[in-house]
Image (cartoon, rainbow, N blue to C red; front, side):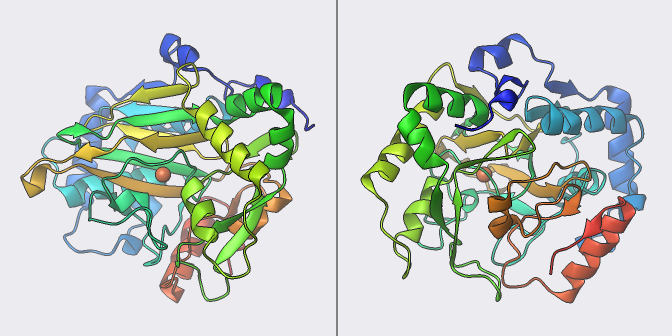
Length: 362
Ligand SMILES: [Fe+2]
């Protein structure tokens, strides 16, 4: 059995803990909001590529301390933070996306997120089939499995909420592991051996269509989780991937059942102007399906960033297949995709240098 010292950390919360102590919720005051609005209105240039903006272009001013504290809570506290009060009103979708980008540039090195190597994703219903071989949840309106995203940190900035549904769910993977190990130590052992994950046809030229790693592993006495049922199921259709054993299937089912327990899963609706910050190593997330508004400008839309923060911790060796680097404070993770160009490499290097980080991505 693995070292369990990390299982007593703040990140090992229950749903009641999160409801009772809301110190993971951070609210921007009017001065901070006004500053952010002024900053974006001054800096936004229509159709200017994101890579042409630098961290130094965005002085977060009186919002910096609040956003920094929220990032810290996500990295070293509960693994989850909510920033409320981003100035959504009066901003176009592109201006709001730039505000998310500005916060990202001040917090880490944004990572590409899929086949198009996009560095910011509009989470909205684009009619994608989540369960297809190349399916991704963020561009569908489907109910999603509990999963982690492909970077140390994911941020979701809410521009519009759905007409109904689209409720956000989060569970602590540390708490889930503790319950699994207590109730079914046999399955906790299985979860610490390799599973095969599909890359959903988004692999870079030097990557195989799937990779293998355990669902739980440790590094420097911290417990890490990687779980995404959709990708494990998709991998079953790929040549060379062995069929899941009965014990593996049972592990998947019990883990998902634990994650959705009332005392484990915390639910919330993101309101326009909210930003959810998630540490994917200790937190799993999901959402319910949703019904959208009719008018295009009212449809549900969240801006998603994936970040490699400067103060990241060492990852388990087995995480290296996906993250490419397991060293603390490095540029790592993301889905390099099919369009990871020299411009991407140059951006990654520039942004890493600005934050004093080393770049080890190929
Ligand atoms: Fe996600």
